[in-house]
Image (cartoon, rainbow, N blue to C red; front, side):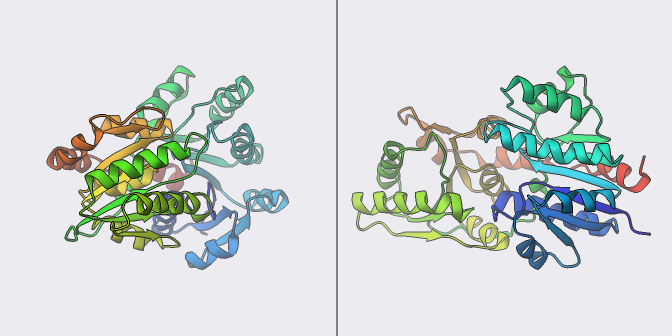
Length: 340
């Protein structure tokens, strides 16, 4: 009889990174012959995207309890679910889903998450005590691994599962990809300064502006395009919105340069051999930029050498680091296959 697995994450919001992680997870679980139910903010979208899976709504708690009760495993992740930068309410929600599974005596897998930052003392206590009862924990960065270690919790340090994405080998065209998202620290001044710098550095190139989650990204992408066109009416711009995961990957892979805010945009750029510059809106961008020695823009500070560093980036050095990023499924498979 097939084992039943429930997936909990930021699914159904049509955010490229989380949907790509879900694709990786669903593909792997189907290979392992598991029955899959996804907790999603848009169950119709999720079941339409993936064949032969079930889905329940993010906020229909009775339905969630019912499917977890009938399941064998809960998988929480990937991404950055267990943090309170987004909100304490978000952290409590994802911990609550894990707590339900533990109360119902289900095996819980924390899948390739970035843990923290968590600043609220209550959030720290809850996270620490709930994670101690999980069957298997994997994290995607060294700081998360060290944080859990300081709490006395074992975890496997893995790369982000999106590093296993197959990116097509395509010829680079004369384009600069700019991927933006709205956030508290993003303001009109930064948009204007970024537009001015890109206009100065790349006036001879086409500027492709990417919205990865239209409900959050699209408005700021339009503002940026308008700022560029006001500075230089001759510059060629185009906004890419409402794309499938495959379309995003295929188009980004063609770019010569990438300037990006989102974590998974940076990963796709690195996989595709695109010279990449990060915009530091969150600690995870700082982490991956440091790991791959990428230039990084601080939204509150003047630009300095970042664009010259972008142009001089050593792609061979990055490629050698990318080649070492093989996602290790062994701990994950052991729990799922043996139910230990």
